[in-house]
Length: 254
Ligand code: ADP
Ligand code: AMP
Image 1 (cartoon, rainbow, N blue to C red):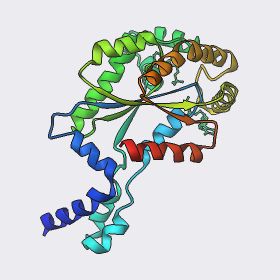
Image 2 (cartoon, helix red, strand yellow):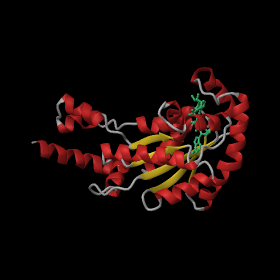
Image 3 (spheres, protein in one colour):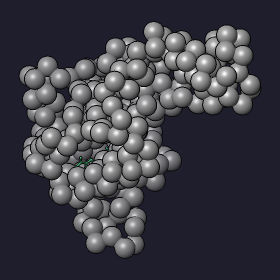
Image 4 (cartoon, rainbow, N blue to C red):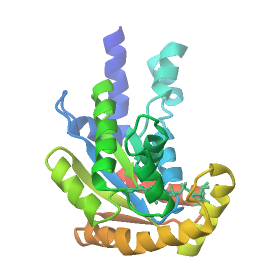
């Protein structure tokens, strides 16, 4: 009875949800390489906001399948919980802020100094934090091999560090670029600063962060653009409008 239900469920899923099935095809058995989408854009462009929405989007298939499968209610709610795109969000900035707070970390003070100055923290620290999170996520669940890496690579040093450490160990699918006017970015971060408690959400730090973005990060985006790997989105629109564009990309790319 159960296996016949599973067969019928797969029969419904396969034609209806290409991103899920593509993910499964890319991940045969336990031999999975991390699949990475780099998420870039100026400070306040909305990277974190949109990544959270990508992660939170779930399949609403239970209602559609319920009558067909005649599943008990508990099984239907399980089906509802399926993530549509199956990504884990890793924010380089967030990982660095967490590390700074860790009293046992030898890097706390150094990280604070860099963040306040809007400068880019040495790559060894950032990569070791990203790699640790990726390894832990996949160790807990081998199917969770898709990552949105937000705020990385932010400069040439980041990119070289990634290539050196992760070459052959992870595949970069594409770069999701949130393109947003600098003044809009600053206004959003100042607004966020009213409640974020972040030491860098003030005008002085923001001017420096925008300069760092233009001088160091934008050239990395341009480099990926030359390789045809950039998916650019107008991030000055509303959260819902931006997410509408994001969805189109992930529905196609998986
Ligand atoms: P980033 O991760 O790129 O620094 P966030 O996602 O934290 O940016 O967004 C910065 C601030 O702007 C947050 O307070 C967020 O609520 C707000 N925000 C994000 N996207 C939009 C948008 N499209 N329109 C208006 N405000 C936004
Ligand atoms: P964010 O949360 O993305 O706005 O990043 C906040 C700050 O964390 C940046 O201004 C940098 O100081 C630091 N940071 C974030 N990402 C990186 C990175 N990839 N490499 C080094 N430093 C970073």
